[in-house]
Length: 156
Ligand code: RBF
Image 1 (spheres, rainbow, N blue to C red):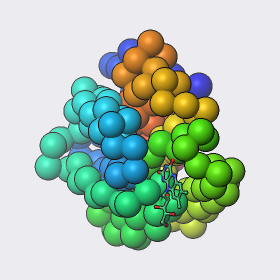
Image 2: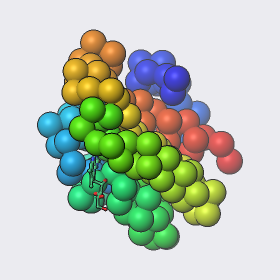
Image 3: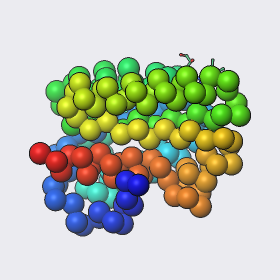
């Protein structure tokens, strides 16, 4: 697990005050991806990022996250990218195709850009499981995606 905000708050080895972040949000299942965005955004602020250094871009669905991430990671001024999406198995026979494509695509952007690109994509069996991970009893995976990129920025 990436760890919680509490686990790195005040202990981070680097300052992210001057770091610039892009958050890419899939519009599909936006009742889930909006709370994921809030979790990721608030965590960045809590860890010291400046509002003016955080940009948000929407993409239609999770399948579009890798291209959205690549466009952002290609920008010199962006230091890290957070991808947020939600694919629900019950809703789509495309589940495996979408999940595999997104995971592989995001991993490729990490390696190609040499910048941290977080996979904050819920892949759940149903809406209830997604809600539990978007600010419910199992935390907020958007927040964890922020913790992940901050930890990766520490690796020089
Ligand atoms: N995008 C998601 O982010 N989550 C989904 O659960 C999801 N289900 C889909 C189900 C079907 C049948 C289709 C055709 C698309 C789905 N998408 C979903 C959208 C997908 O990520 C992408 O935006 C579209 O396929 C257009 O490239």
